[in-house]
Length: 143
Image (cartoon, rainbow, N blue to C red; front, side):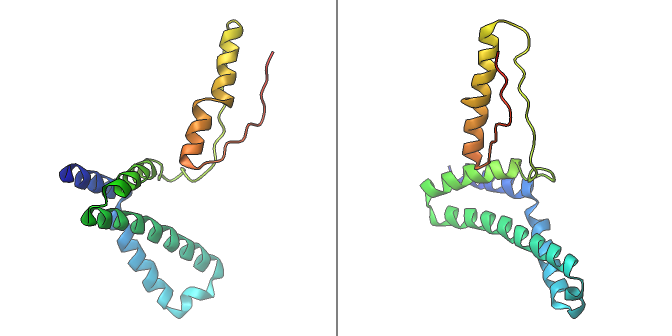
């Protein structure tokens, strides 16, 4: 069991590029120490936000390791699930919004009803709730 948990944590670390993020944190913190860093407020704000995001990711992974050491299995299981989803959805464009269009295609009334159920009450609504995302239904065409 412990080997499985440690392997999952290592996999998450690799997926999130944990080592690179720790190095980047040190680099940004050194940049922030120089007086010239704050002269360009746009760049300083951007780098400070980047530092905050990086620290958040590193803290999540460190928390997993701490929970594993303490033997908090119930909390660790929940945090591992969250971290695995986060690791998958932590790409360059994953923080951006997206448009999704569902077309029932040709067919009879049940085919159209299936499209409506998927859009309103089905998979995407539950998935967005699970991931803490906002789902906005812009337009629903029914005939």
